[in-house]
Image (cartoon, rainbow, N blue to C red):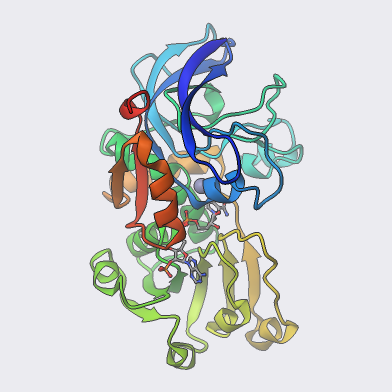
Length: 349
Ligand code: NAP
Ligand code: ZN
């Protein structure tokens, strides 16, 4: 076992404390990654607070991992020491089922292995990226293109792919009108990516606070969802709505904004159910869908797309001792637009 520094939460309430965790010895296809940056995703909070079901403590969250390969197993062919790499929300899958064969490992029929709070094929409880090193099988590691800084690359591994995948699946592009609901970590990536794909992008945020910034990031239009006039004005307007909100919202109100054959894709994952009226779907033949991250091949495609289009998340770098504060700010919708932990501060007070 390899003992490494990490920040863990020991209960649903926290706080984070410096601790050590064990990483497995390198298997033939494993790479050891020295983590440089780890993004903070709202899913870290849902998971650690037990909102999606019970978890074991201590828990080290973090599934937006960017770093450098520092050692490779005897049969690794894809990476060499020194490569700039990333790891997202999953670290393994069966590799044999129909969905894995399609490159949709996130939908593995035997269940993919989450980067943290999961049991891996060695029987070990997985621990995430709020730590100095991680061991991952090479098939679940992606390459970070030279044009993307490591700190900015981290959020792409979850916020980037989670929004890129549905935008591609529902064919965002020129002539498509897309609304992004919630301008947080995922929302601001959905905005940048949809804009780069050539779609017309409207942001629906709770207030007008982020309007100027959203327009600078590429939004064509911006409305406050707290203003009831917004829903009257935009009724029947959009081909595609990407809902990134982490809390329960009135889905029926947003479905009314779809045009004929439009789809509302939920990527936000609140613990509470989101009730849908049949009437909201029947009118205009609308669809209500969901989407979970993206496969490994598509994650690489997204990174290459971001490098080509010079897209990077807006990040605020924090010290490892500021995780609790950062979480509170995420919960207060006060993130602009992703916190990224500088892992070089991990062992420091
Ligand atoms: P985030 O940075 O906290 O962004 C969520 C945004 O939703 C907030 O910034 C806020 O935007 C809006 N919001 C929050 N509470 C709200 C409320 N009560 N009513 C209306 N709007 C509200 O979170 P994130 O990291 O982007 O994650 C968003 C959600 O996606 C989480 O539930 C997360 O677990 C989920 N997720 C899913 C996947 C997947 O594979 N499907 C992957 C990653 C994350 P405004 O201030 O602009 O309104
Ligand atoms: Zn995430």
